[in-house]
Length: 187
Image 1 (cartoon, helix red, strand yellow):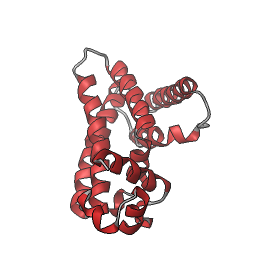
Image 2 (cartoon, rainbow, N blue to C red):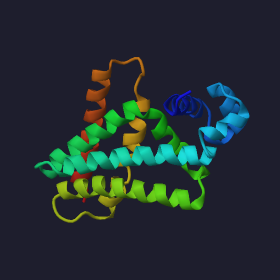
Image 3 (cartoon, one colour):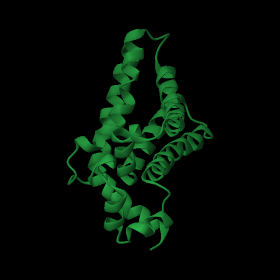
Image 4 (spheres, rainbow, N blue to C red):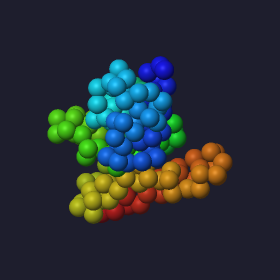
């Protein structure tokens, strides 16, 4: 079994069940290897979770860097970043779920690394939204800004999974744009 196959099968299991609910023995059985052989593929469950979460935030931050290099207005950059976030959510849905549900299962040092990566990404989005407002924002706008990322992370799950991908994208973009406009109008 290749490392890629192992990762894919393991991710399926963790997406179906909570990280804390899966033992190494169950993981080995799910991917089809002996319990002793699992350590040839992964150091620990925690190391596997950490790798997936860092993959997610590195992919998000990579989009930030690509968008930053382009000559776009803050509104255009925010739109592109939101589109990239939602597209990445389609391809890395299990990673997003693990980030929301299981990041607390990591050691303190691993949690710090993940938190720093997440905060770097969040800071970029919040900065772009702040740039769109007229004048300095008050506590109401600052509080509303914290809603954007949880909404982006959960929005795809709100929609019917049988809905056509194009329809899902239009609906998610419309909802996110409405939220951004509402935040811009807050004092």
